[in-house]
Length: 601
Ligand SMILES: Cc1cc2nc3c(=O)[nH]c(=O)nc-3n(C[C@H](O)[C@H](O)[C@H](O)COP(=O)(O)OP(=O)(O)OC[C@H]3O[C@@H](n4cnc5c(N)ncnc54)[C@H](O)[C@@H]3O)c2cc1C
Image 1 (spheres, rainbow, N blue to C red):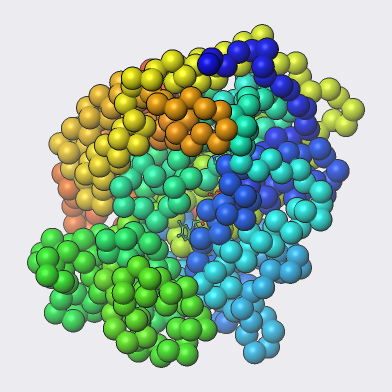
Image 2 (image 1 turned 90 degrees about the horizontal axis):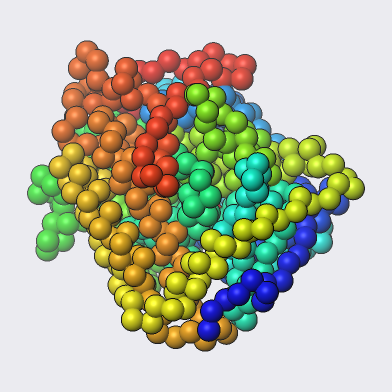
């Protein structure tokens, strides 16, 4: 049976937030405490959002373990981003970091403690003191369950602030009026299959990442890039989607993450000769060099025949020298993951690991207030009524490579900043803008095409093929030829997405319908990624293209990075599958610009 306009109910709010992970709930907390009428939608119960899986910590230069300050953090983040991060946004984030972490502490977040009662901080990849001189302990941790502790703290604070949650509701499309303002979303109540319009003065997207476009991923099944799909269909460009982070230590064969906190606590990576090979590649930071760098070194060891195991296709991570007491106290989940997913007791033997897709550096372009922006003649202009925060957004603080623990920080800083900006611009007593006459046309067309296509392909078959293509054509090591082939294959796959059908048209909790809708969002993220990647003819951060590799002494492109041509952000436009570019913001708010230099560790 088709969906029709007259079956659609409407509800009105000051703010609708799509996503109840760390970013959505940090923003909603700010808004609910200010007395705004705020609705938060989530495909899953809020505390099951993917933030719950974050393990290692949240960065802030508290200086609890040794001297640290926001300038060191700022420098590390700019260098970590391989100079693609916007330096004004990075300064803002690093300066705000201690405040947002202390806010959480005051809400009751159960951080680990030092003997003097201060928050425990551990070393993490790329975190240094004195501008790269030596490692520093900056990651504030709650054992290896930091995201779990954070999400529960935020949920409880939201319940106290009377935020309204719509649990197991899936937002489908943004509603924009003739002026281009965002005035609401369409949404499906998953339990009943009923369709709604949620009308609002402001919509904030906080839908997390799209890690499920890859085959081997540390991401949850719900990370299907829905916010990216909604934005792309509504005419908003996606920024820097070629940059995907492979985390060095996914459990080989399973993909489950073993936090960088393992290496922060002293774990080391070994090749089949038992050699601690990172000492060769990164003499100062060794195993704690940034993730893009470590992942590539691991790949190189495997390619050169020094991988471990019968097929020489993984690396060993050794923790047993830390001692069982430290492992059980600081890394209890890592111990459990070892037993459950690799049949390995990490207190006694090394665990097989491989680089695994983990984080999207790109996303929906925003400014530091969380406002979604579109670029006209090189100038960023806010889209009225639309914000984005968290992993679905690109502000851009992570540039071409994110530093570990900067994501939980990004979602706290920009979740709060977006909330503050919405409050400052909310005019009490003003009405929500009217919905345009065509508010539901796109959603109805998408749903009804599925309802009437019983003979089409099964959504998961198409999704599996997409994941295989992305894994093979946009991996740790890329080449121009392989990416170009990927562009063609993904374009062909788009036609198959349009041919997905539903065998079962029942309304009540029909997961097949939901999966089919998710695949449409994955498609936008995958095409944005492969098109943006194939166009960028250089090596930068996580984007390593064999054709453009050079050594560090190259006069114009050291390590393959071509600043003259490519120090710019990519913007991918879904409507005509095209690319435009905009400059990187090199001027910080108050600090001195960190000038580009070859990125060695
Ligand atoms: C295993 C793992 C460990 C990590 N560890 C760390 C770490 O130690 N430190 C760090 O800084 N970062 C870490 N990260 C990264 C970090 O956890 C994430 O980037 C961050 O938590 C994302 O938060 P978010 O609020 O943007 O999205 P999420 O927490 O993913 O939340 C997304 C929300 O959007 C909802 N949603 C999505 N689509 C829809 C839709 N269509 N309709 C309604 N709701 C929708 C979901 O239900 C969910 O509530 C880790 C990541 C992984 C995968």
